Length: 361
Image (tube, rainbow, N blue to C red):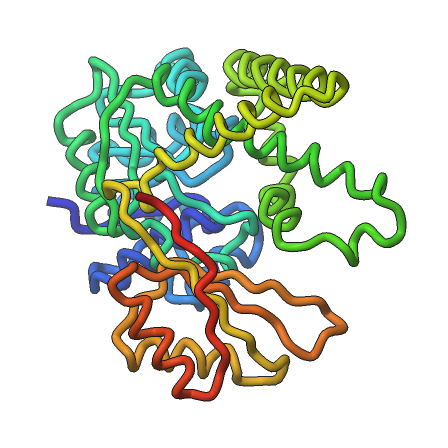
């Protein structure tokens, strides 16, 4: 049984894990971070208790929420301090991390590679939320040397944080993440870098589509340099394949081949519709409802309160709003069965509600 958990790295993921454990009323995680003040900030946000590396000797399981390039060296050092704990990490690349740990002669029986499939484009403890891992997949990449205790610790951790563990090989993980995570980061960053080409009006004319597709460009470049380097072969293959599709689109446009352009767009639409609405669920259908709100304090909070009083769960929310405009469109995604209830409640509260379409199956 796992009693005391330690978390090394009190950034977004580490602090969110601590908050999720706190939510389950488990013993406060011991938080260690090399950046001055970060563990203290995370502790103030109820992510755990600030501690030193020496305190980690009391832990049954230690989570290494550090950059990929640091996992192996930190693992080696902490295994020397704590001779009984199991360890896991949260790095979004696994093959290189495991290879480096083996090369340093870490005790691989006590280590199980892991990666919770969750995150935000902002980092640091102030971006952490206890719900970050709710209904998420928590990838586990054990090796033949991994002990049953270390494997069980990752499954336990995923469950306590609101997700579920799925085992796969490190190579399978890295190939898949190159497509669904690392490539989107590069595409978003490269697309955002095109904004100056739109001229001075570009930022003002950029609507929800541009903001949605470039959201990942807000991510920390230093972290992504490490991730890209650690998974460079698979990522380069993905970028090459993407380059081929871009070239095909250019060729179709230059030839005024509308059928080919349509086929490319349909290919993307059909592939995206295969995505489950939440990672651990089978696909469901949502209704997208738009609500026009005045740009004044308290309106958004009042809208959420109305939804809560109506008993409708908001699956996702976004805001389409120009800084110089007195109103904004708040877009709420809700399960189909709650759409009419929410629309009626919104109208009774005095707002205008629009049904904008459906998502999913």
